[in-house]
Image (cartoon, rainbow, N blue to C red):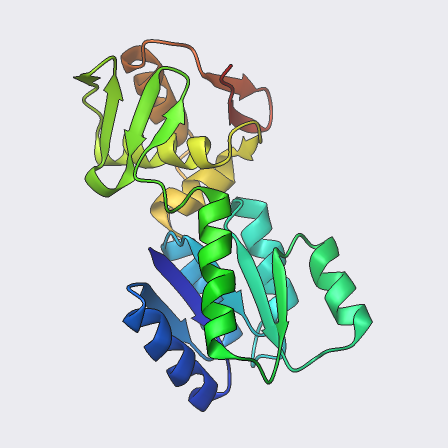
Length: 217
């Protein structure tokens, strides 16, 4: 499990990072909001922990950007305990809000609960008759492996993690290739076409002029 940790207080960052790593998580940590924005586009995370008051891009803007891309669980970690900031965070679809000072063990339990709720702790993801195994980059149907390229699998996994939600072409492209990727006009379309040819069922729907959505019964 890979977690993005953004906190401008170095002592808090080091402490949280140490405990998360001790719990078995991979942690990508930084103290600057602009650096965090780049990381959001260059990497895939199972969960993000965001401070609100940051140098550069603030935590609210980072949350908004994450939500434009995917449903990654987000915990806001802030010294701002006022009602307005908490409401603003939840209205922007934050999953939890932890105020400083906090108990590290409580934070770890909240992380575990969100990962479990999001399905990230599952060893497999079921999409109709198709099973995805994220750790092994493997796709199975009725016991037979479907041979996918790495990028095809990553796109399929992203759609599976956002089942029922339409993801824009640019959101998929940025998530898979990173923020600075030269947006070739038909890159994602080609991968989607190849996926449809390989998958036994038509679970990827095109939303004309917007992007793609996974639909399963």
